[in-house]
Length: 287
Image (cartoon, rainbow, N blue to C red):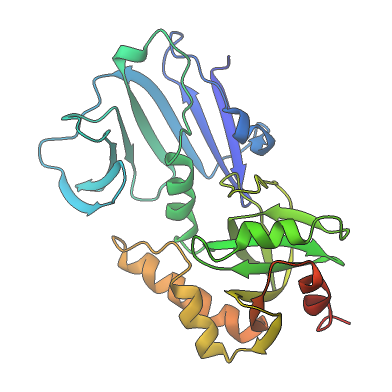
């Protein structure tokens, strides 16, 4: 167990530190490939035992369909995590306005146990928050690296992202993710990053690669490719990103980022059936 644990996803470094010696931190198995070395962090969290609670004047900003809700109080943001049927949160995180520092309150009832500071969905939420501050986007997309560039296969749950990953097995590619991929811009290039939040194929790599093409998945009886105009590509990306509805500036950034992305990266509709011939179809536009 450690008193400081770093996590790096999509080139963003988050670090958690124990507030006292009785707080023992650990990194969950699925996050260990994304462990960060010591160094400056984009976000620093202090983890302490206590009775997780919100300030009396905290105003609800967003209620998810899952376990978390977002509140605001003055310049601070508050994330409260509450199990279904429970009357009080089991974790509460406060964040400063710059998203550079925060404090995580963990339910005292678990004080005898080590703490995973990044327990899902917090790790994913923090990335969505940080990316929306001018850094990039998280997409519902599987990603693989073929001949030095990343191909993203975009689609909602059930569209075939994990299936596509399996169909490419044995084709000599490197997989980044089978479900969720981060895209960021560095200079004049876009880069795709793997994430820990995998789908049915269990692919979660900390690797990255320059982004080459976007494919929007469509299940069909036979394989077919159709180039998409930027406007159509943008429409499809918007329903496959993680929008920050509670943050107008973040929403504006995401829309602008995606609009520029589809202007610079070729977009295709990829109709596919469940056979490996789709590999040759995709590669046919790369030769």
